[in-house]
Amino acid sequence: MKFIETLKNVWKIEELRNRILLTLGLLLVYRFGAQVVLPGIDASRLGEFAGKFDDGGLGGLLNAFTGGAFANASVFALGIMPYISASIVVQLMQIAIPYLQKLQKEGESGRKKINQITRWLTIGICLVQAPTYLIGLPALGVPIEAFILGQTTMFYVSSTIILVTGCVFAMWLGEKITDKGIGNGISILIMVGIIATLPQSFAQEFASRVMESNGGMIMVLIELVIWFVIILVSIMLVMAVRKIPVQYARRTASGSYEKNIFGARQFIPLKLNASGVMPIIFAQAIMFVPALIGGTSFLKDSSVGQWMQVNFSDIFGLWYNVLFAVLIIIFTYFYTAITVPTNKMADDLKRSGGFIPGIKPGTDTAELLDRIMSQITLPGSIFLAGVAIFPAFAVKLFGIQQGWALFYGGTSLLIMVGVAIDTMQQINSYLLNRHYDGLMKTGKNRKAVA
Image (cartoon, rainbow, N blue to C red):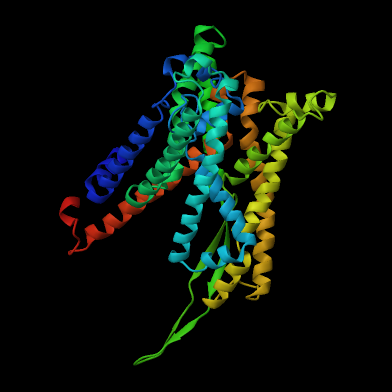
């Protein structure tokens, strides 16, 4: 009943209601575009091509992030991932390029310039990925007959323009959701793309268990219970923080009389997983390399090359996941080091008159924060690696279908959990603000609350 009452309160707030409706409308546009096949390709002949992504694997992972648009040869086949890649590149470049560091310190104006650089880099990445995708379609299983107008130069040029435009349009949708809707638009587009493949993956798993008498309904229920447990563990991973107590110095207020104002005791929340899903994304980008090296002309005929191709092409294999977990732990430390500026935190704390009890402000505080971050990053990185490789355990130990197993961990589950938590927090902040306005006599929405 409390949940239903909360939903009613959400609907009563006009601004929040309009933002939610706008977000849903833009998401509907995005999902509609994911079903529009590129001009010059016969959609009726893509069945075999789309079926290759149903069993997971690297292609299934790419298809999941685009909400099935990759397998549909859609105008949104590249999805929003080129923008994510560009954002990561720009973020890493900020460490080494002084100009970007200067922009980062300029506040809102600098942020706009960085966003513009990211957009142009997104177009550059699309101009590389779009032709590669089009040229690779026959090798991936699209029959020659599916190309209605043939594989001509005109087809490649026009389709490249359409794919680039589709990615830019998806990027625009994400930015509009962020500005005018609710939640982080880019993250929501990725989450919606992932969720779009969930019903089909579950239906295939259900058919495998029940229709083929492979464990029956009991096994389906056990899988759902395990899935919910993994979701709870992921929520704990996203929400867990280490609170560092902070004391602010006592101040004296002067006026008609003097009085002592005792400093408030607060906390610095250091997240257990400060890097989010970025280590997994970095690691997955690197995991393409061993199989490519094994397939080079120097190694493809050797036993080492064949071993690399076999073991690092299977995302549910042992050696793939061992290396995957190690890379996640390494990248977690790396990304945490560049995104959690302990020196800046210590300087800001010193300037505001705060200090950690028993620790000198300045260098000693920065060293303490750095040491604590190193201590909590180790269990956080191991925890993150465990969640990331759990789909492999789900396939090998429980015999779960590969497409459904992708939702048992990894980037897909963590993105879904992270975006859901972030969106709920934004909605909750609107509710709290509205409640505050409702208590004020001059509140513009007071009548609606009553």
